[in-house]
Image (cartoon, rainbow, N blue to C red; front, side, top):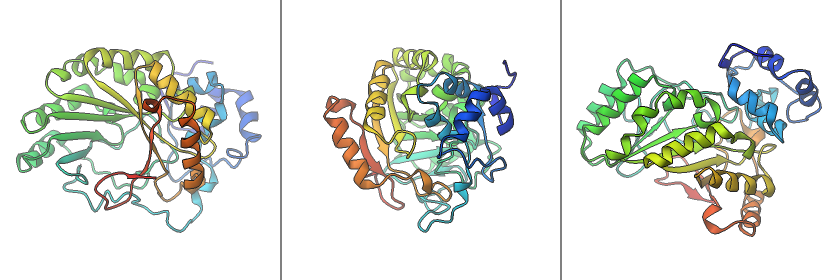
Length: 324
């Protein structure tokens, strides 16, 4: 059946849209059977992603990324509210600086989906009334910054006017030569990416532009993502992908190999494979370092080196990602 919403915020509506076959799949999948219909970290999933699930070869893997279960309430030592030290690295309400001469902007709390393993699921997002002015003012006094990273939430959920205003404020600072955008929208809300295209395609004339997509499973890639990546690459953007290694989603060599190959077919290079950030509520997704390293060694035998992502973790207070 058709559903008018672009985004589901009620699990019941989402399950109704998927249909009875998926109710049976969920009930018979151990990773999903203990469903939480009233999660403290609210449910949100796009209709586009629901359609990907309907067409997926491995639908349970994609469902695992978005459906809340009661495992999220487990209190596991070492899984904390701020696993990567964002708060200690905060320089203003929206600016985080962990790395030398680079700054990350937390642009919004809004995403196209709430990934259940999100490392910022407990982050105290602030609503800046004029984020462009705040970022511009901070850059006025930090003239050594050469790369600005737009993160969130998802920066491409901003309205065209707000995104343009923010990037114009950044471009007023000549030290900033690289603009990087991290986004899950090419596989979650391609319609929202499309509304920015007229502006995005002109940016490589002003910056070295990098889009880092977040794709965890080959079934997340389709014709819509291919069109988005193709248009950006044609416009001069460098396209990279980072994934999170997730138990029950992509913790096997076959899936990771297919993911790297399918990304490359769409013009995107695998960049990082992240070990799980230890956010409170996500421990059930963790894959051991031993298994992670064995997976990398196995896919190294199946792929050319440029398609093997770097296995890393982020450690609070460190000045770079840490190889595993």
